[in-house]
Image 1 (cartoon, one colour):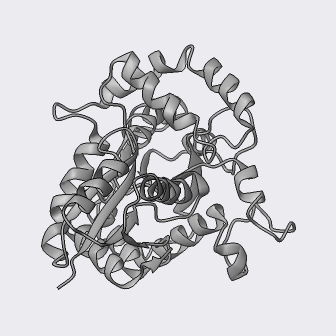
Image 2 (cartoon, rainbow, N blue to C red; image 1 turned 180 degrees about the vertical axis):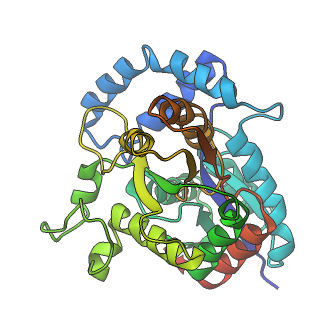
Length: 340
């Protein structure tokens, strides 16, 4: 019987908190044309300027959340890999990162050496963006082309609207909703507006809309912001949240270009000044905790919220390696993937 391997894919992490390791990681990440979509000479110049100071600053941030076992993102992704195995009887389960180690390249080579010919390639990004999903797929194509790998690759598409994902989010947050809280903020990773504009053919599409209702399916398929709103709306309905007690924002803005709004930093200030004392924050664009959740929200966000008048920001953990998520992910990978 032909085995079908499962390759779980996430963004990646520096090898350590040393400045040089962080610089190497940031250089690989920022030089990706799907991340900074500028011509190579301009991108190279810009990244070189960023790498003068950012590695030291980022190394300090990574050190504040680093675990004894290593990068939280990598450790949690490996734990998820193990958690999924009992629910994936079709073949081996591997892990690959787009940047850093363990790499997509080494994972695909390892599977090929084992005689595997079918691979379900699973980017762990619920919502679609070129800077996450597309670049991961293109990296797999590059590896297969350069190494002449005879693999049949099927890809897990964005799963933001799938019931398995929605229910996993709802189940994971239940213990936190049972405790007293004033407001729940769903903070998604941000994206430059230009990344969306170049994909959305309908130039009238409103990137400031507060709801995904009425968005045409062709636009929904490529509009990251609309997919995030749909995620939030489905989750709120499933969790029985009251209108006015939850909101959406976008974090991790880099540079001076216009990114999708509202910005998480602005929302934290606004909520604190409005009298919200106990704030829950979820980050549904991330399936594993990482520097963007643990440091940006859990540490800096906490400080900012308190400075604005709030008392406590409670960061709800990502789905991580919870069994309910491992089971849901395996189901998604069985029924959704399409050949590329």
